[in-house]
Length: 425
Image (cartoon, rainbow, N blue to C red):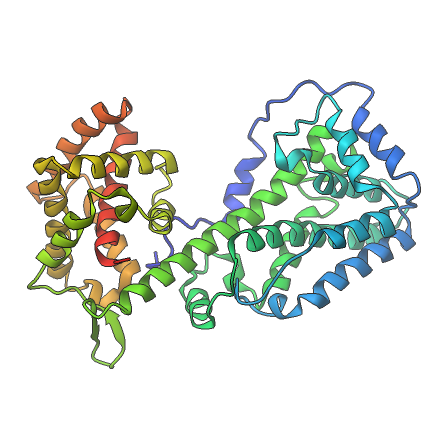
């Protein structure tokens, strides 16, 4: 496992499990009100070669406008944004459908739940319906494959552009983007591709006529339309979230490197993060200075890095743990001592391994610390003592009875305290 790999798992493995999940919904009516409603609104669309060409033309306009993003593997450097005017044009000029009117009518269906954003959205349900209509049309199989691929690309553009626009409010520096691509492991599909367009083509192939969604595309109802949308959204969101976590790790590493108290030169003259081996008190004193001030101690971006490494910890439980520690650190000397021991143990361990921060960077440090605290055969009595005391304390404080949940929160706390002592902001 590479230092920056964290919890990245091949997205396809997650998607294979997807199809086994159950979705709570009311029984679909026999009269299939969804397809009846969609047929009424799409009554002017012919679903022939001309319709297919119009869809392809729309997709190519989006591609050409964002060719800079699609022609490389960077994220956040250049804009990838599809605006409402684009979707309005698609609906009016190609589908000949009033988007807002259709959305309102979809909300009236018994099987559509407005609070479920992915499975009730008019864009997603329309794309799923288009798949159904083209697959069951009179087009040849080759023409069907081609237009289904185009719809898959638009579906992908829609989800990925939405995620990128939501998170990136300003351009990502090119040096961070390049370092992120280098840091990606080959378990990231995009790492194996030449650019994002190849990735979108790869994902669009999930919608092959004889693929996973064959039955859904052939016999479409509200539930199946929603399942297609969730499947595609899961694929792109998983890729985006894991890629974005690597960006944050690289940025945190870069921030630490830029701290004058934590930098040094390796034998080749490269700047690296460096533990001051004879002064672990610097890290301990820094944490004790900020721990009791929750606004200073708890940082959202650093939490996200820890969460990316610990898939057994929820955002809520990590926040509750950090908040409890911060509240306790103000007056509880025992908690202050625990924080000090955690950093003391970690710095000693990193230095004893000869692969500390100076040799591996922040990713290596975090993986090594996680390995130390997660193993059941650790020899350091201080580790066992801290884990035992925190288990009892957090169980009582958080009201969580599952030992496994608390144990994971403890490891996440250790990782966060270590990271926060290095990243000073």
